[in-house]
Image 1 (spheres, helix red, strand yellow):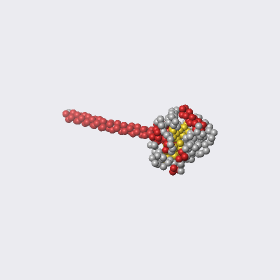
Image 2: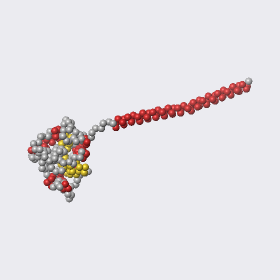
Image 3: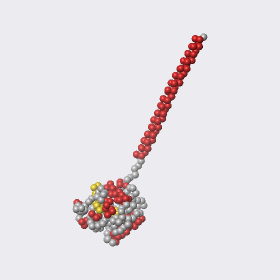
Image 4: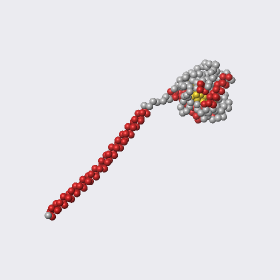
Length: 279
């Protein structure tokens, strides 16, 4: 009898031991399953993120690119709507002759502007002229300059190729087609104001630089063009001390006609009278 009890107790203990072993094995496997499940979820999430990123990248790479202003010949002919303003970038508008109200000239310009141009001539209006700060006022100033050039100076048209206002907009004078009033191998750019009295604005200086960059990109200017102030070519205060202080630090500034240097344009055969108004 005692032997039977002992045998029964032994089997119970054996079963308990087996049960505990199975439970332990179950507990050992459960964390492993959880790790595997979490790993799969993480990998799936990463793959979804990568797939989304690839789709976005594909869409962006295949999006039509807007044409940059530097690739458009915006100053030749009537190839854009005159009710809109072409943009050189960063808000610098180009206001053409029709938009600022240029008068029809009775004398035709006869000297074409040969490109690429080797020299840039910087001038200002001077004569205590206040800078203009909006298209309405600057258009009036442009018409006044043109009227004075024709009626008082006997010129066929406004003097310079381009004019730049205080807010950095570019006004087309004679443009790219015709030589400026000096009829030499220069692109004349005029700051609209008296810059012996007023300092040029940052937007105005930037507008000139954007115009020059556009000209180089479109091969209207030589890549290694020379930039000079009018007071280097003749006895004058133009373009004013404040503008001169700025442009003399620009990369293409050329120190001709000063400190014993050769006269501006002498390497091209220009003479002193080459810098006087002719037409």
